[in-house]
Length: 222
View (cartoon, rainbow, N blue to C red):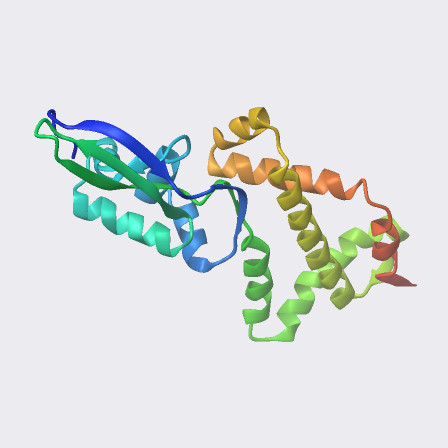
C-alpha cells in the first residue's frame, strides 16, 4: 500500500497488450464466466495497469485474497505482470510494486462450441447424437425442398463455419480503430460475446461458396 510520504516516480511498462484473445481453455473460460472477484479484477484492469495495493483498495479484500485471484488469472493467461511502479519516500529511498494488466483488451469465449461438441459426444448412445443432428437436419432441410441432410457433413460444416468466424474476428479486432475498441472494452462480457458473434456471422455473408457447401449436405429427397 502507498504510504502518505511515498511518491510515484515512474511506471515502467514492458508488456505490449494484445487487442484480442480467443480464450479456449477450461481454466480461462471459468475465470471469464465468473461474475464475482475474478470478473471485477478484469474490469478494473480494463483501462490501465494497477498494483496489488490498488486492486486491494478497490475490492476491499486482503492482500492474500487479491493475490490468490491474480495468480489464478495469470495462470489462465488473462492477466500478466506488465511492469513495475517505482516509489520514493521522504528519505529518498526507493521501492517498487508489480503492475498487472489484462493480457488483451478484448476476450472471446471460444470454448462454447467445443463444449457443445463434447456434450454430444459424451452421451452414451449414438441414438441421442443422431436425435440432435436429425432435428438440425430437419429444420435446415426446409431451405432445400425438405431434402434429407447428412448429419456428419452438417456438423463438420458447422464447426468449419465457427472456426472461420473466429479467424475473421481475430483479424478484424486486431485492426479495430481506437474509438471502436474503446466502445467494445466498455461492454459487459455477454455483450461483447454477442456483438463479436453477430459481426462474425455477417462477415461470413460476404464470402461466396457457403450456400453451395451447405447444399451438398442435402442430396436425397425425403
